[in-house]
Amino acid sequence: MTPIVFFLGTAAELIKVYPVLRALDNQNRSWKVVSSAQAPYSFGAQWKEFGLREGFESLSPRSTDLLSSGEAFFWFLSSFVSGLFSRACRENFEGHTVVVHGDTLTTLLGAILARWHKAARLVHLEGGRRSGNLWRPFPEEISRRLVSRLTQLHLSENAKCAENLRKEGKTNIVDTFGNTQQAAIDLRSDPASKTWEKPYCVLNLHRFENMAFQWENVLRVTKASAQGRTAYFISHGHVEERLGLKKAELEAAGVKFLPRLGFFSFLSLLEGAEFLVTDGSGNQDDVALLGVPTLILREEIETSTALAPAGSGLLAGWRWPEIEKFFAEYKKYRRPPQKADPRILQAAVGALIERGK
Image (cartoon, rainbow, N blue to C red; front, side):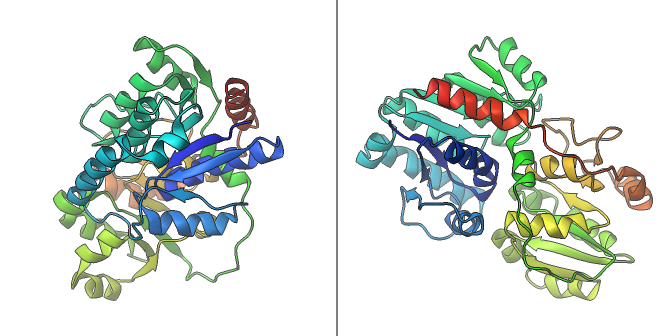
């Protein structure tokens, strides 16, 4: 039986695919992970934390994560051209069920190459997310819409995402009743204990466009977060470069910088936090279950499960009256923690196995 091939490139993608890989192991179904090398350093670190049973194949000898949007563009272009004529791509994709995840550049790259190299079936996990704005988030919204055009089996996290696809004329859609990252939360093992300086909050701000166009606001919200508490700032490589001399200024204001943590370690940090400040989409799925008050610095959100009143998040963009109100009232956003819906893996893995025969 040929293995199901997962084409992934970032730690976030691996986190969301991890519970699917575990479930496939439980069903004695073979799988293989091929890395695009979009973020090889963080991807490899996350693989190690998960302790997955076998290694992954990489299409590139790259060892460092992309640090700018310009670098990402040229990486995508070169990976696309080389992938069209790559023997390794052909051998990994031709005749196989190929799974891509989400909306990264790797997702789009994998979808194109899988169809070019005659994959037996292209599956899009987390299909159907839509922000309603083609240009925000960029390039994720464009990526996910293009991938949907190429996909032959759409695994959508809820009825709304499935309906988005039906409105676009798509068929062969499976509702997985939730995001697979929520299932990953339930699979965690307790990392080595760590004493954090309470009270504290967590900041995970890393989007390229915010580092370029909202930098003063990033600094301002970081300082505001540290008032009356320690602010743990997750430092991505490109953010570290951008900080420069500002890092010492923020440290004097009560900010402590942490290297990127593995998923399980990050959850441990997050659970004890007063609140989270983020501009990413992956954290939305964490807080939807953990119930941690969350300030989301985005203009659009692809799924509403994390937002108040049902969820613990506030979508504020960079509107300072809303940001300041959150800091004053964040405690009212806390929600009881929840368990992931057990149907998530049943639906996702069931669809993969049934259509991978």
